[in-house]
Amino acid sequence: MKLGVLDQMAQPKGMTAEETAARTMEMAQYVEELGYERYWFAEHHATKGLASSSPEIMMAAVAAKTVKLKVGSGGILLPQYSAYKIATQLSQLQALFPGRIEAGVGRSPGGNETIRSLLADGKQDQLADYPDKLRDLITFLSKEGKVRAAPRTEDAPNLFSLGLGENSAKLAAELGIGYVYGHFIKPNRGKEAHQTYRAHFRPGYLDHPDTRSAIFVICGETDEQAEELAISQDVWLLNVEKGLDSRVPSIEEAKAKIWRVKEIEQIRENRKRMIIGGPGKVKNELLHLSERYQCNDWLILTNIYDFHEKQQSYRRIMELFS
Image (cartoon, rainbow, N blue to C red; front, side, top):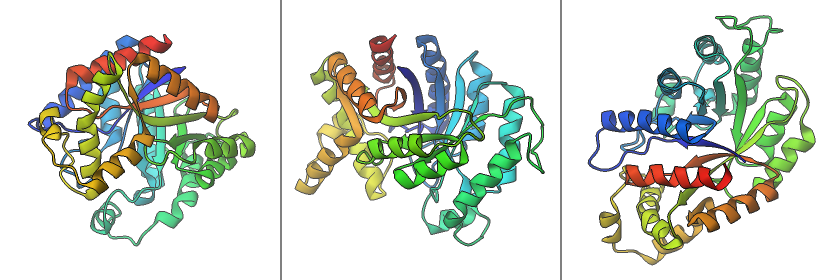
């Protein structure tokens, strides 16, 4: 089993963005010592509690403070930017940290229409241009491209497209790049997405298929402790979905919340996006999903309030498979 971290830099209440960034650096160094292979950063805008808005910058910062940890984006919002500019940033990172750069790009608008327009410098909605921009990005990163991004490194960074189903999987496969399935967003199309990717893969940018999946995991000492920790993530995710305060509440604040019936139902639905439990439960469920998806490479998200317990969750997960 290959394990990595996908970090949205979810900011706990009572902590500043600066403190969250410092804790993130500490976490990356910690998981490298545990044996995690990679550390990826999400891209979010116009939120109060998700502090990862520039994955390229966080990739550089973490790579500079670690030794062999691969750093990546999960993912850069390609429709909103120039494909050539993204290619130059990735090439620059590859020159600084050869063999450690993994670029994941996605189709998300990054926020509401105002934010999308600001990111795209006022240009019209470009989401439909994603396949063409992805082809351009591949060309700019490839040695065979007519126009190649500088600096012209010996090897190109690994490239992945993020997606939530068969259409995105087929696109990545036909372009010959890697594919990352977002189980933590949409858990009901994983098997079909992975099957589609493998069935349609054509050697291109990559010689062989490369698939990963991203999922929320909280691993406690016991199932009961994991449930105790998870309540802060449950409330956080509800607030994110409602467009409310996206900082992570404490367990005490989360426990004090008065639940509505619809909220309880939504938490149950959201739990399909997660694995929560003690070591035995986490191992069994992750192995089950790995078999179902035919994927043994996972990016783990853990958005709980307590930093120490977050570290311990990552430690327990690694110990299950090391």
